[in-house]
Each structure stands twice: as structure tokens, then as C-alpha cells.
Amino acid sequence: MVLKEFETLLNIYEKVGGNKDVFKQRNVANLLIQENRVLNSNNAEGVIMESRQTRNGVIANLLVKQKVKVKNPVHLCFGVLPKEGRQEIMMNISVEDGAEVEVVAHCLFPNAVKVIHKMDADIKIGKNAKFKYQETHYHGNYGGIRVIPRARVSVGKNSLYENIFSLIIGRVGFLDFDYEVNCDEKSVVDLAMKVYGKEDDSIKVRESVNLNGKESKSLVKTRVVLKDKAKAEVIGETYGNAPYAHGHVDCTEILIGRGAVAKAIPIVAVKDDRAKVTHEAAIGSIDKRQLETLMARGLNEEEAINVIVKGILK
Amino acid sequence: MLKVENLIFKKGKTKILKDVNLEIKRGEIHALLGLNGTGKTTLAYALMGCSGYQPSGGRILFERNEITRLSIWQRAKLGITLAWQGPARFEGLTVREYLKCSNKDADVDNILSIVGFSPDYSERMVDDELSGGERKRIELASVIAMHPKLAILDEIDSGIDIVSMPSIRKTIRKMKKGGITVLLITHNEYILDVADKISLICAGEIVKTAKPQVAKEYFKKHCKGCTHLYQVNWEELKNGFKGV
Image 1 (cartoon, chains in turn orange, red):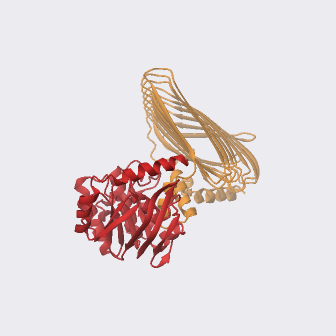
Image 2: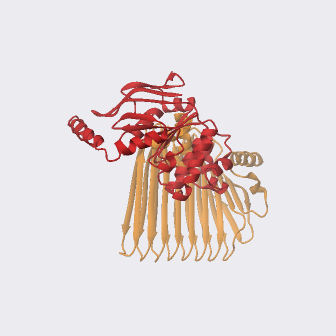
Image 3: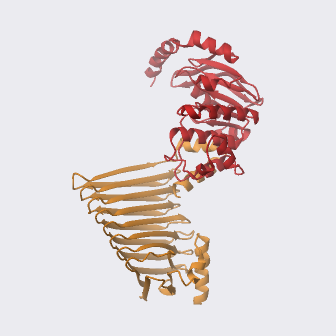
């Protein structure tokens, strides 16, 4: 049973672009969770992964030790294979001073008709560290899923934090995403989100960055494409609280057809007159010039829209 | 190859194109010359079938078939394409991917070399990463990748640095050699030199079509300093605005 689930999850993992072999390699730190069961867990040099089963999920701790530069990306996979289920993940990530690590995470709910996935993450990045986190979701084609990711992130002095969240294959269902990031001196934060909503998908995104340290920098970039009756509300917040802090909020939402509804709320505030925070938000249909250029090269309207959307969500 | 008969295009009550008659023969480089605001780009858009540029009169024939009511995509399928004066920029699309939209079998490296770029350019993004001049040359490359029967090049030379001009001229000649008929819209005399024939457009009308030398002399004598356009347009614009 466990082996079958393990193989099924890996096959889906591969279908959405992952390399399933990484869960069989000894030198790759990984964690694979199906509902509330840990199907695979592996540590690597300087990377300690701990996990504990709870009633509805798993408490997982990832520690990257001081000054360790992790060669291979750490792979995380969270799945719910049945049509119905509930998964609550409590994730604690600690990247110690001078450490560097990249995490590739996949959240797979291929058959979801009535599934809830909650993620509550606490991420601490030390000084002079680098943490890249890339999360890809696949929710299947039924739209019967509620995904609620929450994260509180603190980024230490001179550190880099990159986060890419991608949900572009299949349905979204209901997404309520809320990340809050606190930045220390000279830290750099890059948050990117790409979501493709279809049918009656509902998307709610809040990404908030507090530039608390002198010369800290951030970019919050959101790309949402909506069609059919999908709706989205994107709140991008950046607060310039320290001298020479520099932040930018960039949100583009594209509507295909008449039924979709998009809302963008950029909130920018500055507490120090030497800080600078800017924003741009654009909501609209596919750019006419782009569309006509591709059609003048022989693509029909649908093909041209696909090329443009693929580019925006890349 | 292309025949335009009494083409009329109105914006509001203003006639931008008035009885345009034009014939472009297969294999020729036919230049369209005129001052700003004379209707060159409007004619290019009407020929390509861009939305909002549907003629209110006259007809367009391509290889003897009427295409006046065809969509932009249908015209492209027949072998017509347009290089925009201000080309679109595409987020997330590399030059290679963009050129492959024109033709999935395109030899990207070779096409880039034709427009004077190294193969490294194929991985650049077709967004703000490219300068205006670079984007223009990539636009020309995408036209070449498509290998159309008729390429309408709307001020393909504008924004191009002087050092790259010979390469643009050479590229247009290569297109002709490769069997592509070109309608070239330009103000640049150096680029104009590649034309086999020039049509002069004034206030939405073709006033003369001739060999380059004759057309250029006519242009210098009658068009430079001409106030015809402005007199006509002020009057018509006034009438047009009344209707807005």
C-alpha cells in the first residue's frame, strides 16, 4: 500500500516536471508526505530533516547548518491522493548564518474533489545566507480543493530570500495565500507568484514585505491569468521602514473572456524619508499588439493567447 | 501580387485613406514614401487586416483573390505579414521561442546571423531586455523566419543605429533574393535605395508611382515643404471633431 502510494505520487511528481529519482538518491535531502504519513525522508550533509506525524498532517523541521552550502536542492513533496482528505503541515525551516540552500517543493492533489491543504510555515534565514524556495502545485481538474498556505519569514542581514510559487497546470480550486516577510539590513527578497485560474476558481493572495533593515530590498511580482468565471484578489504590500530601503510591487492580471474578475490592491508605505517603495499594477485583456503580432505570423487566436499566457506565467 | 483598388478608410468622419490605388508586383521591393501623418501606417494596418482598420470602401486583392474582409490570421496564412513600427514586447518569451512562433522549423541561429546577431541572442528575452533597435532587428528576423510571400515592413529602419543600417539594407535585399516581396515604408533615403519602385502617398492618396530616381525627384520637388496635408487635415479634422 505504502509502496504503491509512493510510486503513484512520484509518477505524478514527474508528470508536473519533477525528477522522481531525487527521492531515491542518498546525497539528496528530501521529504515525501502523503496525507499525514511520511513516505520518505532523507538527510544530506549539513541538512537535517525531522518529521512527526499528527492527526491531520505532519510537523516537519528543516535545518541547514551554519556555513553549509548545500550542493543538491532539497526536495519536498506533499500529496493527498484520495478524492477527499485534509492535510495540515507545520513547517519550520531554519537556514543558519552563512548557509546556502535551494528547496524544490511540489504539492500534489491530483484527484481532489474535497481536499483541504493547510501549510503553516515559519522560516528563519540567518545572516549572510541564501535561501531559494520554489513551490509548484498541481490540483487536478476537479477544482474541489482548498489550499491555505501561511508563512512568516525573517531574513537576516546580508541574506537573500527567493520564493517562487507556481500553480498553472490544472485547476486552482480555492487558494488563500498569505506570506509575511521581515527583512534585516542589506537583505534582498524576491517573491514571485504565478497562478492560472479557470472555471470558478477563487484566488486570494496577500504578500507583505517589511523592509526593516537599512538598505534592504524587495520585489513582489505577481502574475495571474484568469478565464471563464475565475476570480482573483491580489494584495501586494511593502513597507519601507528603514533608511535606503527599496521595494517594488509589480502585479499583472490578465483576463481572457468576459466572465473572470480580477482585483489588485497594492499597498505601499514609507516610514523613513530615505526609503523608496514603488508599485505597478495592470489588469486587462491580452495586449492587442502582442496578439496581432503573433496572428500576423500565422498563429490563430487561441494559439497566440497560449503563447502570451505561457510567457507571462513562465 | 497585391492590388489595392479605391481603398477608403475613415476614422470618425475623417478620411485617412482616400481612394488608394496601389499595385505591387511579385518579387519587387516596393517602397511607400510620405510625410508623417499621410496614411502610410494606416495603409499597412489595413493591408494586414488589423482590428479597427477595416476599410469602408474599396478592395484588396492578393494573388487575384479578394482579402478585404479576411482576418489578420487568414491573411497571414495566405502569406502576408507585417513588421510593426513599434514592435510588441513579450514577457517570458525568448528570442528563440518568438522566432519559432513564425515557423517551428526555423533555423534560428542562421536567421539571427542574417540580421547581424550572434546565436547568443536566441536566449535573450523579447521584453524590455532588448533595446529599441535590437527589437526592430528581431522583428525583421521573425518575418524572415516566417518566409512570407509579402512582407510589409513599417519603418523597420527607425531606431536602428547608423552602423547597423547596411545590415538592414542587405537583409531586405536577401529577402527579395529569397523570393519575398516587400512593401517597405521608410523615410530613410539610404534604405530607400533598395527599392525597385516607389509610391508617394500624400494626405491618404497615392500621388505617384515610379522608378526610384523619378519618384525621389518628384518627392523633393513637390512633397518636401508641402502644406497640402496640413491644410486638408485641419479642415477635415475640424469636421471630424464635430461628429465626436
